Amino acid sequence: MLSSLTRSTRQFFEDTGSAIFFFRSFSRNIFRSDFYWGEFIRQCYLAGVRSLSIVLLTGFVLGFVLTLQSLPTLKQFGAESFVPDMVAISVIREIGPVITSLICAGKIASGIGAELGSMKVTEQVAAMEVSGANPIQYLAVTRILACTFMVPLLVLFSDIMSFLGGFAGINVAGEMTAVMYFNKSFANLVFSDFVPAFIKTIAFGFSIGFIGCYKGFNASRGTESVGIAANSAVVAACVSIIIIDALAVQITSLFIYN
Amino acid sequence: MENVIEVRGLTKSFNGKEVLKGIDLSVKRGENVVVLGRSGEGKSVTIQCIAALLTPDSGTVKVLGQDIHSLGEEALKDLRKKMGFLFQQAALYDSMSVRENLSFPLKAVLKIKDPAEIKMRSEEVLEAVGLQDAIDKMPSELSGGQRKRMGLARTLVVNPEIILYDEPTTGLDTITSQEISHLIMDVQKRYKATAIIITHDMHCAKVTADRILIMNDGKYIAEDSYEALENSPDKLINSFFKF
Ligand SMILES: Nc1ncnc2c1ncn2[C@@H]1O[C@H](COP(=O)(O)OP(=O)(O)OP(=O)(O)O)[C@@H](O)[C@H]1O
Ligand SMILES: [Mg+2]
Image 1 (tube, rainbow over the protein chains, first blue to last red):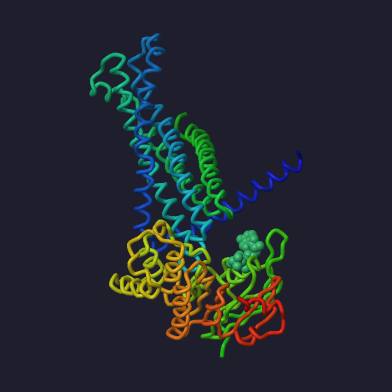
Image 2 (image 1 turned 30 degrees about the vertical axis):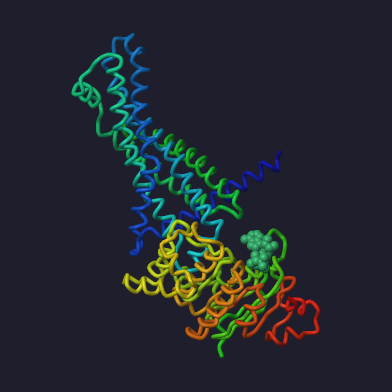
């Protein structure tokens, strides 16, 4: 019992140490003149394509369900006209970024973990390294930056879909014109609803890419470690999203909402 | 003549099991050294230590006069540009086509921009390994032997001064093996390349070796020419040559 506790504690510190080490070699390789633009764009495209359809669908359902669920309750207080407003605020501030990023963690982080893990196991990473190319720069930097760039974009798409979903929900229950819905949704939205949410999604995107690459690069020998890399990438990315979100809420409420 | 590779007192253990128990090795410029040894002896581990893919527990490795394990990132990269490494399992980049596998080191490492030159060099090495028809295939579409030859093409496309071959002919038919052995000789003559060749293929050893080392129990136990070792009275050494 105690020995397993000390072992897992040691494991944790070892992991943290090597993650910091990985971060250092990542940050050393971002600002280089010979950035692989082609590979970066290809990774952006892949990250987008991998998750676009499911992100759009979830976004729509989110807005739809949230609207239908809150209508009856708010009706009791005669406040059903606040539904679009409430849905918009909760989607943009919190639910949109978090749910979309969790989905991206499942799709993108696992994809990167599996891909780089299998490259590691089949010595492709070593081949790249020994040829004098820089695998961190070519494989990791491009993917991490692609995620950092694409996840906020996907969140934006998802938010738009939630908005449409909410509109559909309202019209299933009763009737409201598009202009009216639009006006009501944006009535109480202010700039400070968007900015912290946007910054947060950048951090989510970065952590998805970083954890996927870190787990892939640290896959050990043998094919089963590819699965382990993919799996642990998803778990770690989800946990980090939740932790970052909790911190972000604390920070924004300190500075903005009071 | 100068020693291009100089290894002194190399040891390496994995999980408490000592694989290399003090390896000493010098390779002169333009020389082909063949390493023989039973499976699992640590032949691949040795050349991975020489290329700094693995860090040895003790001992030094000097390549072109530089201690490869104490070089900084940039210096190591520059040194590696002069080295080629053929992986035992080929290690082809499987998200890239054959053409891209060859153009990647040219573009990313040698910084060649001219597409005509990239095309010419890629086609030249592919022809040398007899794969010119496969240029637009993906690695997953190649057979085991084709992958091996493709790996060789990718190693040779940058014209390295020093080449570490990990079983260049394993898994190939006799005719192709002989062609590859002669290709290795060609590369040695044409580019004055220095090479360490790990092999179980005695024909390849006979054709390519200027000198043969035999590895047993984590050490080199014999070092001589093919003919001398073939007639060695030592039973263990002799057993490698009975086939
Ligand atoms: N990265 C590693 N981690 C742990 N053990 C390793 C590692 N690389 C090699 N080994 C172990 O070292 C020993 C030597 O392996 P190596 O691959 O050098 O053998 P080899 O002489 O090349 O054999 P073969 O002719 O079959 O290729 C083996 O027992 C192997 O299990
Ligand atoms: Mg081997």
